[in-house]
Length: 79
Image (cartoon, rainbow, N blue to C red; front, side, top):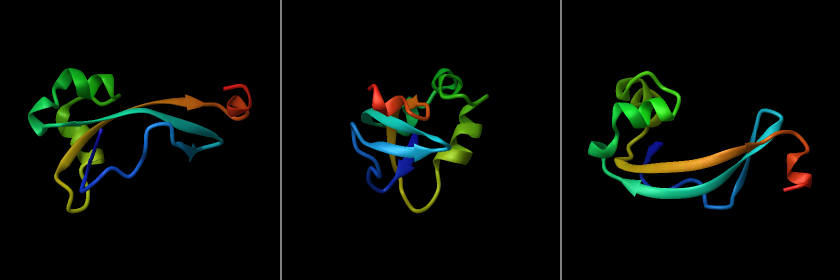
């Protein structure tokens, strides 16, 4: 999840992360009220507060739920 003024990634886009890449599967605009502790835990955080400390930065106030998967080094050769 990210809080931005506009999306900074696109569906199908591949972005370098460590030695591999992440591939964006979907982007959905959601409301701040849609961010629950369950969603925070699914996203790897202990709480909504912890998630927002990472996701909310800058002047943006639009919330985007971004689903993606990780391709390890060389994984894009077979994907």
